Amino acid sequence: MTREATAFDRSLMSVEYQTVSYVTGPLVFVENVHDVSYNEMVAIVMPDKSERSGQVLEVSGNMAVIQVFEGTQGIDVDQTRVRFLEEVAKVDVSPDLLGRVLAGTGKPIDGGAPIIPEKRLDITGSPINPYCREQPADFIETGISAIDGLNTLVRGQKLPIFSGSGLPANELAAQIIRQARVVSGEQFAIVFGAMGITHREAAYFMQQFETTGALERVVFFMNLADDPTVERLLTPKCALTVAEYLAFEKDMQVLVVLSDMTNYCEALREVSTAREEVPGRRGYPGYMYTDLSTIYERAGRIKGRIGSVTQLPILTMPDDDITHPIPDLTGYITEGQIVLSRHLHRRGVYPPIDVLPCLSRLMNLGIGEGKTREDHRAVANQLYAAYAQGRDLRRLVAIVGEEALSDTDRRYLHFADGFEKQIIGQGETGRSIEDTLRVGWELMSELPIGELKRVRDFIDKYHPTAGEKAAAKE
Image 1: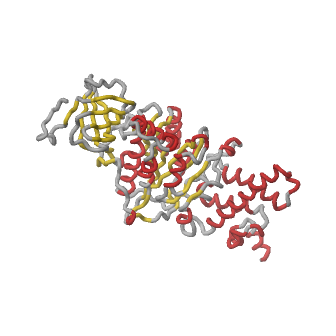
Image 2: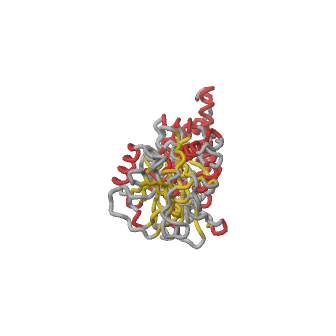
Image 3: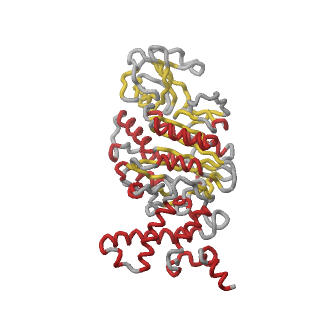
């Protein structure tokens, strides 16, 4: 061990160790360390004097386990020195981050002017005291009818999107980022954390943001598939730290889009395997639930603060299995889910959102008179019930044929087709909530009025034939 300072003057100069015992995967094990803390940042000095950054993952006795952000390739056990920096991982924050593209660790990579930070904040954040939490109660318009109309996103909510391999989750994310807005007209910003995406996907997102002008209100954290795995573990934490700063110190309404959480969990498993930990379900670490909760629970509102942090995490379900540990644990922590359907995607429906397994547990808090429209809840219930009945009849038709159905059943069957084409399959054009409800009423008008039991209190006001009946009475 070589030391550049004594214990007496350690506060003035950092301590360096040359006691690397061995290297495995992204981890470095250092022996005979003293006064080292969990999560402490580390500088790894290579034989050629270049430096890499890392973080203390575990301390056991006089042994420290360090995860290296830039990878461990080329680290010489005998000549590499390790310097402990006596601070945790931090990210520079400033309002100037809006419109910038950053690496997963928060460093600008867009070639723009250097960012002069207003603060340096700890990326682990501070948990919101449950007593200080404000109940989510305001509508966020995504421009997607299947979300706005039937599974509404509420300010301060965490609502994940469950996708599958090859489904257009990235296209949906880009569309939401382009279209999302708060109807109150307050300052609105988006923090996008992309984890483990390919160069093609990164180019797609940049092209979408630049051509539509959406980049001006986006802070884009980009971790590519060939970037270090360990950096992937920092990306969502850095993104949420910036979001909390914009929301609670700059009074903005912030939507955080994290894609893809599956890549994050795979990085978590890789590091856990390198540490030789006892695996849990399907090889994922047993603490994955706790780790995910430290990310998802950073969404919310605080009493007395104007801003809010809303999360829209996106994950890919391996083999389209919704019971896989990643979507399973995500569903436990978050407040609902939006599920993409491979069947609808094969039929050319975009966005292919399967509304039947979808759920927004906080929807009722963000809709209704004064927020969206008085008939919103009733219309959503009626559309859901009619579509579910139409889907059931499709299975029946496969057995007995359409000729065996009654006239009303045929209407429900045709309603299901129209619902998928007009409500779900709206394409890439955004819709206001008023347009969504109008299209919903037009679809419901194809059913007998006697079947519209859930919207009967609003038929005279909103049904397409209401105006004709009023004119006939006059």
